Image 1 (tube, rainbow, N blue to C red):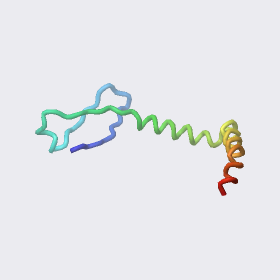
Image 2 (cartoon, helix red, strand yellow):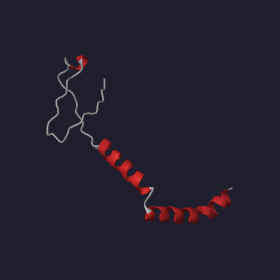
Image 3 (cartoon, rainbow, N blue to C red):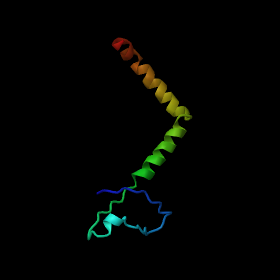
Image 4 (cartoon, rainbow, N blue to C red):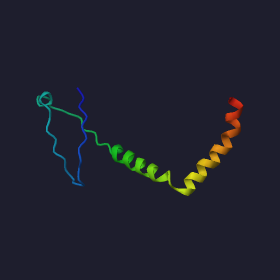
Length: 75
């Protein structure tokens, strides 16, 4: 059985995990540390700010104009 839980570390160096009842009789468990949750959160925040960034808006406009001709050919 696989159990996935997210724990907040609060920048500590140790995490204590209470094992579920059905894991307590096991002699081995696999622990995987994955920081992708924080990475994804940071990326989402950056994307929220990008929508108001003039350089990002200019890039989007340029790309949209570049592909306008292709879009018209497909339709």
